[in-house]
Length: 131
Image (cartoon, rainbow, N blue to C red; front, side, top):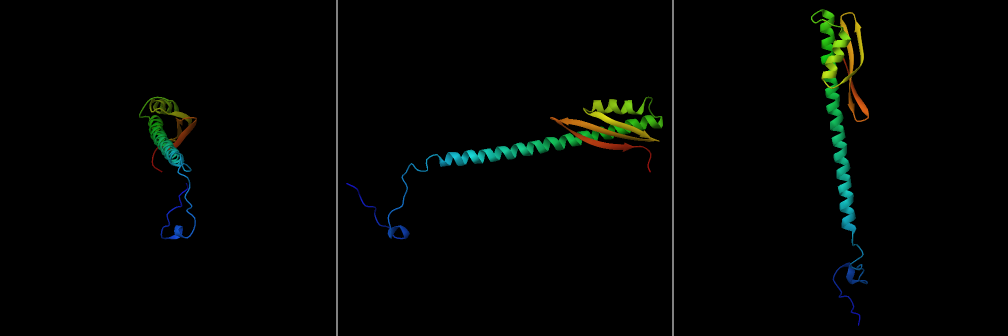
């Protein structure tokens, strides 16, 4: 024997009861939770990558500044040695590479690079007497 649905007040009372079977939405919450977890994880990885890049850029800038100052000290005669060799030693001690170093008069211009995965964060610095 099939029972008729009980009439309710409102829109369902005018027509047939349009309820879906109980199992029709089964698993939808799991799919939604998985999509939200994936979005949150992707956002977290993006933020972590941006933070890592920012830290590497700051390290490259600090290494470039210190290397340029070391080269300028050598140019002024305050320290003995080749300006670019001293700059390279200081950059290496700071965990950076020194892809470029040049001397123009009493000014030292250096570029320091810090690896970030397969890429490099670079920074330029100049040191010498005031202009």
